[in-house]
Image 1 (cartoon, rainbow, N blue to C red):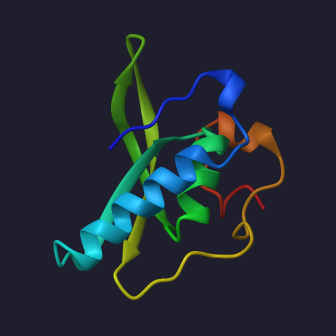
Image 2: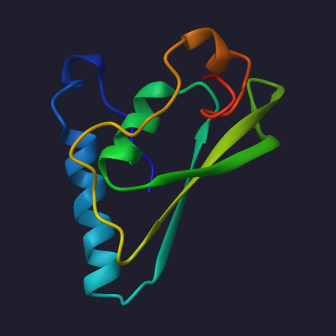
Length: 109
């Protein structure tokens, strides 16, 4: 699943709701045990969507995605069937500069 929203619809929880619904379906109907997701390093909005849907940061995939003719890092997130969505944003970086350089959330502290 991928999600892209027109800027007019940002901040309304639409991507989070859609992701939570799809993940719940995967666990409850399809019997999945684990779901993985990747986000381009530095994409804080997508990272927040995943965290609100209960995904946890697991690592960085170096030069994993070709975007605009350049190899870029991705962050890897995972969620297990017994994980629960978090009520608040998970701990992570506070400075945007660290994300732009492709550092992991833990390195940016």
